[in-house]
Amino acid sequence: PQTWDALKQIMRARFVPSYYACDLLNRLQQLRQGTKSVEEYYQELQMGMLRCKLEEDEEPTMSRFMGGLKHEIQDILAYKEYNNITHLLHLACKAEREVQG
Image (cartoon, rainbow, N blue to C red; front, side, top):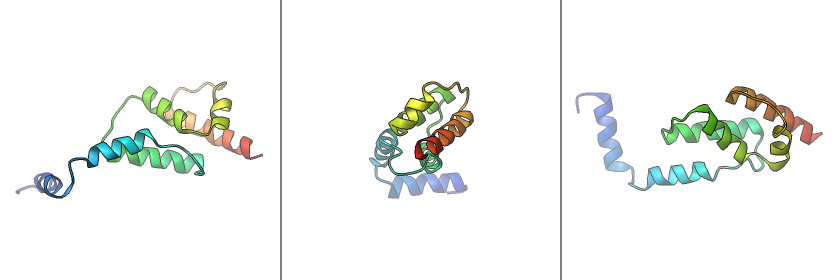
């Protein structure tokens, strides 16, 4: 291989199993906040999207983010207005603090 990209492609083809991309996508689709904070959940979501090389518009990303949040936080955010993922993240953090008391 003459370039770094060519080497990466060869290495990926040789050492990464064919089911790896499918597993990553499944893991991303099943991602939930659980016991993580909103910020930790958001970071994990972003890393998952990067690993899957998933580039989507903000609307589906916001929907994916909302769908994985705890139900108490989702209920609070249902009455809020947001227009981008950053604003939604800030509102979710506020909602989390509200839920925690």
